[in-house]
Length: 395
Ligand SMILES: Cc1cc2nc3c(=O)[nH]c(=O)nc-3n(C[C@H](O)[C@H](O)[C@H](O)COP(=O)(O)OP(=O)(O)OC[C@H]3O[C@@H](n4cnc5c(N)ncnc54)[C@H](O)[C@@H]3O)c2cc1C
Image (cartoon, rainbow, N blue to C red):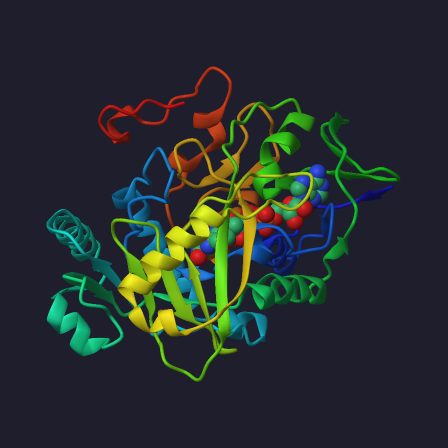
């Protein structure tokens, strides 16, 4: 049995970053992780830092991200990524060499222009280039690319280093971390939370549920009904090759992200669905998605056709029914916070700072009221209706 000022459930990048922020502000923090830290969404992610407005949707994604609403949050997260390595005193292989988002059809070009207007509106510098200009800037782009936006702030970091570096820094500030320790119960005890594990319990006023695709299950332990829509998506890595691609390349119309990481491998992703989500084990990859994703990547960047694929993997993604992030205190459950949802790698430094401010009574740097779990709970299940695409209803 123990006590803590805050108990964090889950040691993915969000749990680790939150542990760091809370511990460095002087709180006694305990992190409980059901398996090994950084293995699930955070160990399988592409690690892109999405700063220009997000592409429309992953293949198979029913509800699009509300890109205009997410953009200011991406911008704020992008600013925080600038000194993450200094704050953690670690090399995370952060690269901010900018990114292209390409279009191949007139409709996609129109979307690029709309997106560019939103970006300009919030003071984010992007440029719309025609196909030839884009190819002059990045000669690797194929002839099917008719236009692109360029954003100098896009980038990526090594996810296998990021979560562990946050955790190491949290430990340096006194956080206690227990791996292979699933949380099995959340009860109220003398006005605080009692967090149960198989052999122990911790009493604490603050619980942060950062359980990724298991957020709903952990909320249910406290009697809170928070609807999530987890899925499994997949990624591919080529063999290592000498440096050839410095930028992140995405597609406005179809899920695609391509970049070359520090080790030399080219990573291909974009949220194509795995065969199925398996929350009890490892999700199986889909050959159909592999073929579709790699084919599309080779069309946009023809040099990829000459590279051998080394590995394909799938990872669980804590998607929400409205594809928007989730952060805040669970209504009716004082002291129980939840954090997760879409693009959590990009948002990790921002959401961790936001939670520190919420927990310690400060004012978050971005307004997160819209991302409250309230919209995904019991009777209040609707997202703001005006923001749903025409003809779509919340499922
Ligand atoms: C293939 C893929 C590509 C992605 N690409 C990008 C990208 O390019 N950019 C971007 O911004 N985002 C991307 N994402 C999304 C983002 O990276 C991940 O969603 C993010 O890393 C999730 O972090 P997390 O900490 O919320 O969850 P996770 O990393 O999934 O961690 C949750 C942790 O909670 C633990 N847990 C669950 N239940 C319990 C319990 N009862 N007790 C204790 N512990 C528990 C789990 O074991 C797990 O370790 C991608 C995701 C995937 C899968």
